[in-house]
Length: 260
Length: 146
Image (cartoon, rainbow over all chains, first blue to last red; front, top):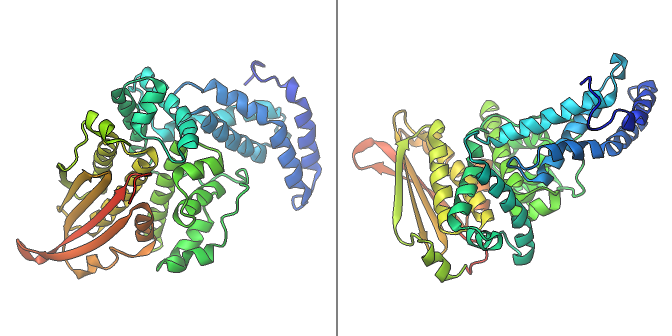
């Protein structure tokens, strides 16, 4: 990125100063985490800005913001000021890469008509609102009547959106150090797994999951929350929760095979 | 969801749909697609549809793994009174394949995602050296009296 357009490098010039502070610390300095967190927080508008550039392409805005923030955390962790580039120049392609990967994982086929993708986004939006009103997730009929479109259109958009899983058989990205911490703790793994007969094989695999994946998995299968309730707690859409669960279960299955 | 809606949109109450396909992990997206389409068409809520996808994935994966090479996977789906009924079966060679069918984390996952789930095995009437493995589950739509 040699052009200085969009998020201005100058706007974030203070960030480079903080990276210098970070670089001056010893690797085991406990204060490093604090400085890192400050940098992430300072740059959140950058993630927001990039997420907005991808809005309207078939994925809910709030999911894009979450994904962009994960990309931002990765960028902060990987940035090396010694290379002489500014942080923003490094962060923008890193965050965009994360968002693009999300679209690839989501498996939006290029042939899905734009109208269907837009409807899918609209469905994502009203689903949250209707879930609040109903105390459960809405049905296609309830969504259609809220949006003033036909049931056939809603069905089509839902089925198109669900096609993602045909492409997401690959293992989830595990290279996500320092994913944003979640407020809710998921409790003690040991006691939760008491009823599972292959818990010895399962425990290390679950412990190694990225924090959000682990939280979503535990809340659904040991906390007995619905996907809609988890979505609310974790701050993403129900569709995203569904995707995380499918991906995580597939990766656990594959990993259990390897461990015998 | 009211009965009027269900009728208006052609709920397939009572009629059973069946899909037969190679018992191969690469084919499972077809089972998932069928389950999703039927649950959507029958106006199940989105949480239930999403859970059904996960459940059928787990059940079918278990059967495919136990299946003999060249075996078929037979999946039957029926919607009845806001309840989704799935039955999947395949043929396996020996008792060994039966062992893990209703065990482990995956079985816990299936129990969480469904209202009732069971695994069975019986001798294949057409070939005494084989077993027919079956996993059945039911799941009611959210917000319907059980």
